[in-house]
Image 1 (tube, helix red, strand yellow):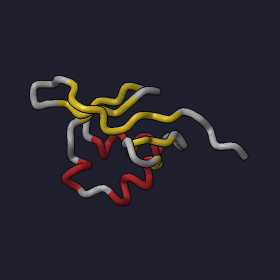
Image 2 (spheres, one colour):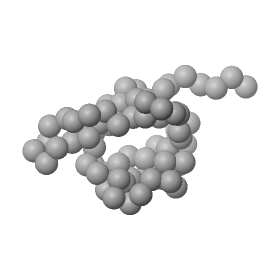
Image 3 (cartoon, helix red, strand yellow):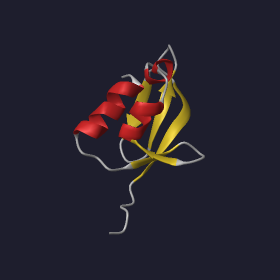
Image 4 (cartoon, helix red, strand yellow):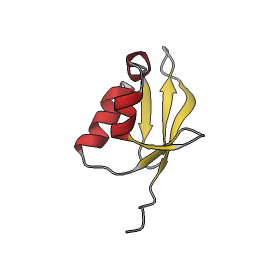
Length: 75
């Protein structure tokens, strides 16, 4: 599955989970708006509740692109 498809699904589901890339936290909608198309076309794997990782051409997991932060912001 492409990164773009996973991020769009998170947005469509109304998911407010934050994604952490090792430097900052971002929402899925924000990433869709700012990431270049080349990055969005990468093949990735979503491990719900844990991470989004790259997939190699052979289908092996690569580096983790985003850790999923399930904490909800305080109102």
